[in-house]
Image 1 (cartoon, rainbow, N blue to C red):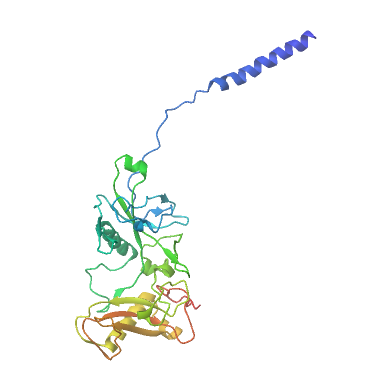
Image 2: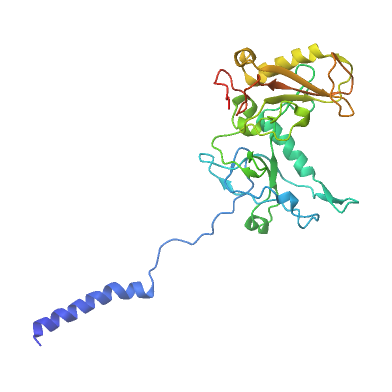
Length: 314
């Protein structure tokens, strides 16, 4: 063999070994290995990025099976599945109460605290504040869920609960599903964010006989306020006038009733649940205030904070 060729071959093999051998035995990388930081409790306003089971509370009638979903924090700039409205540093242990029929009920103080925090986050009045226009409390359909730390966080000794509010959707067959949404529900009763899922829209014009209350499906009207245990007899005209004031405030459009030819409606039941039709409304009656559509028309969307925007006719 030509000596020159042999020499070139040997040189090539030496260079190849110089490249491959250090890679084969491992390469030293400068720096110090560090564990992934352990996240702590969330902050109010952070977003839920991970879907959770809406039927978590129906898992079974024991404390072992009544288990909160885990919190997965997500990006508020993209579609998310709820927002943290408060953090309970020291949660109480729920009490599972059996009944004579073989079922069970749950006394969960954490859920109570979550509802109060969500109401404040959405911009609703506190329970201790006086009724709006003398008789009304806002009717808003807002669900809540207590979310617990991840398994890794619990193993590190974290035991907080994050209260979150979220949006859900009711399908035509009655199935409930989570809604991913952009933006924030903070002060939603004033901004109108999520209105089609937060609103209370009976399918029927007779609210006493309502079978569904989804605003994103065709419906005959919307309930904006309710009142319970009327302290004394009141004229129906007085209630209707105060109801109109409530509607103007909720919709942010004092001319909406006239423009849409909507009907201000106060529907009332007595303490026994029977419909009250008279001009004088007896004490202890339960009230609902809202609008119904003119004959032959349906809405498909909520009127919460609609302002001068288009009326969402079906």
